[in-house]
Image 1 (cartoon, rainbow, N blue to C red):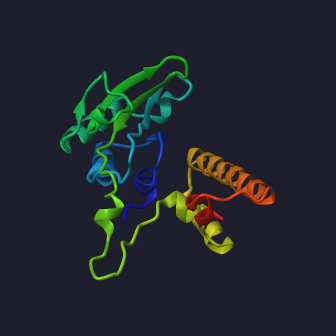
Image 2 (image 1 turned 30 degrees about the vertical axis):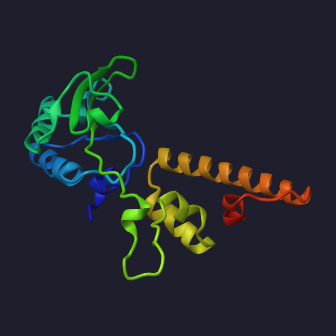
Length: 198
């Protein structure tokens, strides 16, 4: 399992940004291989952005050759440069260099290869009576006990973007549960999905 920066990148479930100050060619090669050597287990494309330079306020943190180092590292693992790449499935395995003049930072945006999780029917264990459905990370988070929930937050939700998404998931689940309680108070029948949630 990847650790350090590579581990954080591999745990990304939505577009995120990472800083590569102090990286040389060897470290870029290791990072590219550890992060993108295997497809991400995601349903939708994400953009992984690496800060590789900037204006005079941050220039000293980055080697002038850092963009080239990262581009070479990605090319070595089979990724292709494509300036039209965007957050869509067709851009899997591509990257692009971008100088954001508003932020005064230079980025290499990477669009990882993604391997969608197999459908529940494919996950069924033939030896069991019924299909065994694997839960998504979101479902595991929402259905966990307090101790597991705290551990999950500390070990898997390391970026601000991931924590923000978790908060939105919690708000959505609370709204759904409040709606179910309202239906129950009016003695209305619940759907099978609502009964399973409640």
